[in-house]
Length: 104
Image 1 (cartoon, rainbow, N blue to C red):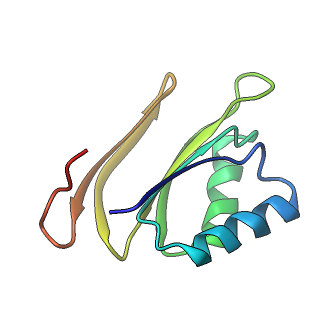
Image 2: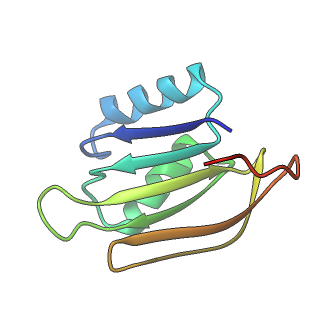
């Protein structure tokens, strides 16, 4: 499994979305963590699904001027059973397609 944590500093800008898409095209990422998405959860989820349509995302919206985060799972390698977000916490219950759980 390959994980990527990226401080995107906002996804509203087209150049930032294209840079994220290019980065993900270069690397076979399975799990993606985005920091400072700077948007409400629904907008961020829609934006991310337009870039990565075969992924599952869960987001936390902005509370301050530099907040918001998102977690994404590549559906080709991992199956999401459930996901949740509340009070600054994101969580997913997942099953790895190769039936091996990687050491974290």
